[in-house]
Image (cartoon, rainbow, N blue to C red):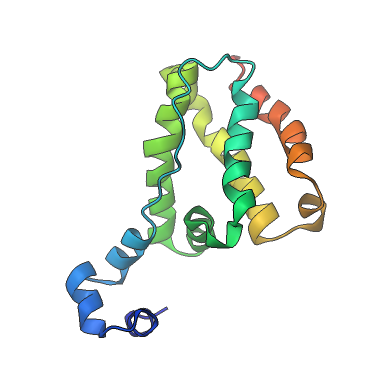
Length: 157
């Protein structure tokens, strides 16, 4: 989408977009300022953590996945280096520290990427690619099936 198209959608002059955002990349960053709203997981028992992580992302996406900035960013990150860098920043700043509070810094450093891969893979296959085998599952079936995989990723060893 061009700056002109964004301005037209907003009903403003393109120079106003440039004045407030500088360039297309800065506009993109502002539009995708994503807060994952991850809770403090410090006191969560280890056996409940994997299910909670799956549920957090499912709850976020099940409401209105077409309007979720995280999925917009995921879609863009596949083909756009700037979007991919933004996705890495968000997960490094939000997922890794949240996981570290629950499982410790060392384990989180080793496993946060793999946990993210599982959860983003779910988002990609269920909400973007809409693979029938994944979209046919209820949220409860996904939670029950994906939780053991997240649990395995978080086990020491």
